[in-house]
Length: 450
Image 1 (cartoon, rainbow, N blue to C red):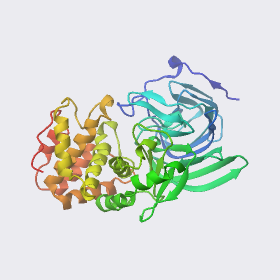
Image 2 (image 1 turned 30 degrees about the vertical axis):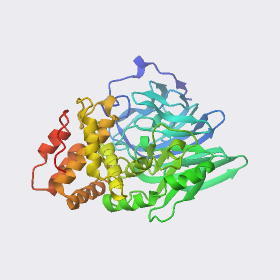
Image 3 (image 1 turned 90 degrees about the vertical axis):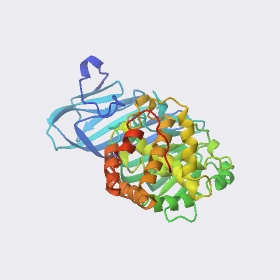
Image 4 (image 1 turned 135 degrees about the horizontal axis):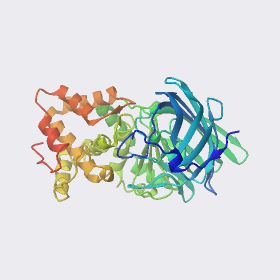
């Protein structure tokens, strides 16, 4: 019988290709995952997670060993590969390493089942705590950019998109929310099992799990289903703060193209305060502090909704291109303001250009570096770049470009060069001076005429 062994770094660590230099420890090579099936149990009172992850993949090269990303807080009890126990397996340095009983050729089917358990906790990263986190009465997952391994074994990189089935059993007094459509809810004694199906290709960092004492409702007046999940005590505040969510959806569908997910959109508000909202595929998570009845977080509501197109459906191939997520979502804030009677996008551009002008001029938008990939300058300079592009193309061609972008790369991955190449087809004038000034130069350019 194969037994788990605690592998030493010198015995098992080998030089392997780095999936992304911004997160050199994340991601794995040699195979491509097509589906994850998670069958889990979570005990809120003790913060105990246990269950089995079944990973369906195909080998891309001949493999004698397979690695998966998995946080050190989780212990692996058993592993099966194509129904058989491997020669050995072990965990170290946030990796599960599996030595196969026999080498698999390229193109072979690969089904890995991992039984594991532990008390999950977020990972400490350059960007703060990321991953599975206890709330005062429940739990949440904030996966961006490398938090998925804190609760399931995976190939944690943005290009590793797959479908998911998440089944989670927890105390019946709590509601569990994951990505996709709720396909089953079974109550047995004091526990309830929730099963969600997410068919659209999704990278691990955008898979989420939210557990709390929540009520649910469907928002009216939207062709795209919008569901709200929140503590009952915040219902009145929610009705004011999120009153225009359906109108935002209507605007963004018109400007950006069809909403990319069949199951619709879920807005979840936790009973705890959160520093910033959290995005996931088909789900946005806000803190109680974003739901105070004063409508002070409407720009954030627009921002998170826009990520369903820019970041979640169309996802970067490399983290260096994060402006394709955050610059676009930030510009969506300005577009919503312009549409809803607030400041115009041009006024917001003037406002934030003045703010950026007094900040350090040492950031390349197209390659900000890992420490600065979530710096606010990426968000605002990215939005300014889009605003200047809108001025060059005109509204008709600019929004046609955005719709082609979300269609061509729907549920896929793209890079800055893909966007600039696509944009070139919408004008007879060279856009290279714009890209050089705003994407590839650190100094903040003048705003221009728009």
